[in-house]
Length: 301
Image (cartoon, rainbow, N blue to C red; front, side, top):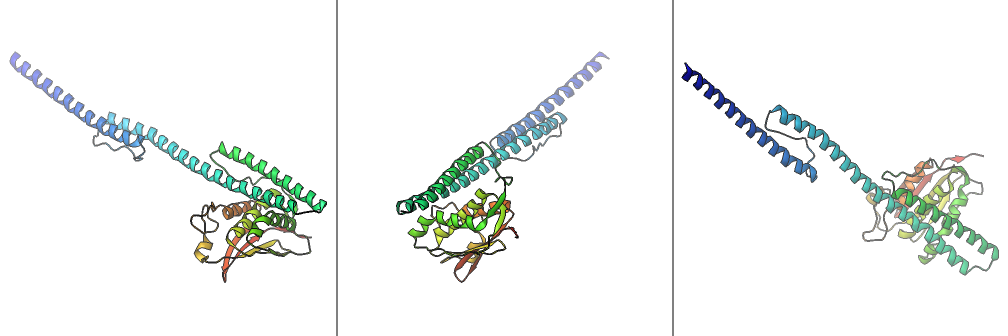
């Protein structure tokens, strides 16, 4: 009797030990799989869920818990990368805008040197002061954007009735030096009737500054027309420009010429800003001439 009982106990122990060994081997394999996949997740080469070959409940529960934690880690990594990209884009955009008032200030300084009329000199000095103030505001924006990962142009800026013709004329004068250096004599067709739009002055100036800056870079002629309905067309010669290129003019970082110092942001900024001003902007190529058409909602008198 006793030998039979001892044999049964030995068999039971052997089965138990075998089961434990198998369990240990299964867990060892499961943890080995988890270890490899954790490494892939941490170095960013893998973002998929954990896959285990075992059906062990404890191992699969651990894998599920890790899936949740690593999914959060992956989402945070993507968010931070996107934020860094947006930050660089916005810093580049503001840097582009900083160059425009600097160009305008240089133009007014050149005008001052050759101007003997005291009233005109005072007018140019006032415009230099305005552009200096604009530079201060833009550097303030640059600081604000440098501490933010999600930047949008402020569409809640205060609005007021503005003389659109006056805005256009001031912006054109800002590019006096650039136009002169390229032999460009702007032709204007402006109505005698005042065209009023409700918007923000700085926003409108940035829109026209960017459009005229683009014309100064790539053209050798320029004509500007304003209608009483608030439609502005800016036309310049565009040698070699194609319809495909025109379709991309408002894309961020697109430049017509490779290797230029242009960031390709000017017209994309103008499009974004004109949207906040309640208007629209389009481009059309016809017979080698590029026409930028801007529509503003004017006040009827």
